[in-house]
Every structure is written in structure tokens, then in C-alpha cells.
Image (tube, rainbow, N blue to C red; front, side, top):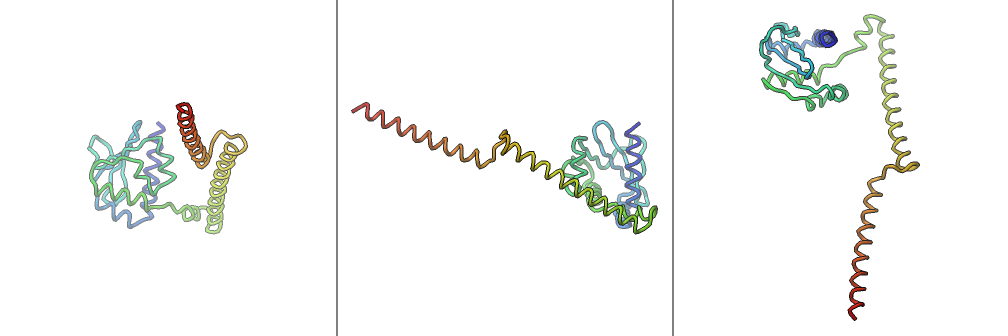
Length: 194
């Protein structure tokens, strides 16, 4: 039940973006009638390009022209880094259609401010979006500071980790000591022979 709800939401979200972007629909119209399948292992989404460039839910057993295989464990990485999203997936099928899908996924952006302005007005939408961006930026900075503080704690106060330079210096000292011991052993051996 949950995957079908998610897919309905995904289908509606993509069509919402396509409705705002004429250039994207023009690109998809060139592939009208083609079917794309996003296979996440446990479930798959099958979408067909309509004659108007909008997406339709595909029914039946018609084979997909493009299959995009994605691991569920990679979804957070894909959502975090959309520009490199297609490096986390495996694509099979029609190269031209797959390339169009890739270009659209990298280029299309949701204009939250535009959609919010229809509900709360232009000024409130601008403030809400800028506030959300500031909150996201603050959360990222807090996450980075926390990671830095944890690393500093484990490096300096409770040394469970070592800096790479410290390890390299220690390895150099061990090598030097080994060489010194070998030279000393040879001197002792020489003196014993005399």
C-alpha cells in the first residue's frame, strides 16, 4: 500500500514540475509512448511518456525502453547530490531516452516560493522560503561543527584516533630505530669476531 501511495505522489510531483517547464515537455514529447521503469528492488515504478510530454502510469506487461535500477540504500545520496544522482544508479535500454531523463532530473527544480505564493501570498512565501533555507544552512553548519568537535575529542582529549601525520612520523621513527638496531647488531658482531 505504501509504495503505491509514494508512486502516486512521485508521479504527481514530476507532472507538477513538467507543467511548469515547457522546454522539459518538449524534450519528452520526442519520446512519446516510451516507457521508463525505476526498479528499486522491492518495488518498481513504471511511467509512460504521454503525447503531451506529461507522464502517465503504465499498466500491463509492456517492456520498458529504459530501466533505472537504484538501491534503496543509495536514495539519501541521490537526494543529497542530484547532480551526481545518475552515478548511483544502473541504467539499461534506450540511450537517447535515458539521456533525456538524466538531463531533466538534473535541470528541473521545484520553485517552492512560486507554489507557496499562491497559498500565502508573495511576501509570506519569500519569507517562508528564506527562513527554511536559513534553517537548513544552520542545520548543516551545526552538523559540521558537531563532527569537528567529535573528531577533536577523539584526536586530542581521548585519543582513540590518530592524525595521519602522527602515524607517518611514528612509522619513520620505527624505521630509523630498526636501521639503528641493525647497524648496532653488525658492530657487535664485528667486535665479537675480533
